Image (tube, rainbow, N blue to C red; front, side, top):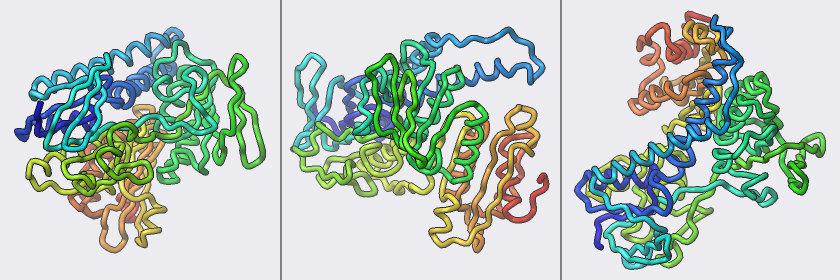
Length: 462
């Protein structure tokens, strides 16, 4: 079979690239070894949000009295929570199947491998192999849970995010190693359902990629929720010979032993670049990532790479954007290269975290003179009415020209608010323009305008 485009991998990079290619009139196929939608739809973004929603509902019920509602004691049915999450994921995967059919994209099930001469070899589950050719081959094979050398995952007592989503029963205690998005989301989920959770973070702050003020606020919120946090600490070894786990943690004050049922290794993701044909085709890599230009060309003509296997943020929406830019360029269009400094990051623990652009520290290091404003949700009428007063919005502007350098939010539903900042930065909106854009009252989003007003010494409600 000959195609214009073959995409290896059907995650949010791969399937989006395939759909856009088909829309542009290119004969397209996508190769998938497991389930359409990839990790994001089946084992990442979507099912974790379903788990977190169940935890949030449980939390609401437990705090119903604070809203003047009397309820009987709530009980979390762990198996039913897991089942709902899997159902949501399955529904989304079926949705991608529909989109493939609608866009007349051939789905080839099996493990894909790029071969020289614009060929793709696909090995089916039964071991049979077939070869396909395409003018353009896009590698979109994604990533997997990073395994630390002293924390080998056995899938039972030391687990990664996939097992954390389908545990047969709720553990009484858990140590979460790593406090990035995956770590803190699972920490919140399990702690809310009643598991005793301890988070161990190697860096000085939890959620270390975030602005330091965000990290400090999440630490306060987690401690209030009963989640123990150990920063500047590392897991040296885990003894799984007994009924549970004995975790040796090195801290600034010496070694500590933590006992728990399960250790969740959440130390990030690593790119799936093995056995996809890079060596045979001569495609170059650096530091575990495929080297590409701004339009995702590899060093070998006709071969492209997008998503978690290239440098840049390992996020679903980044992979989708890269896929669209890649195929538009293949089709002869003139897309703009992606601005990686205007990519929103969202973490869905409670309170939620959303950010884009420079942190305060990074903006100062870049030589900017800053105007910074903060507005706490404790001063927001909508947040008070909702019973969600934890958190704040922090806005960072360039003092000289009013350029919107960055925004950092922690609180209820802030992941829904950050898009305003992304669009504003894309349109080169200044602090003055943001300040004079009337925001509706009462809303959480008013905090963006108020934090801007604070930066310019005009805040009303503080």
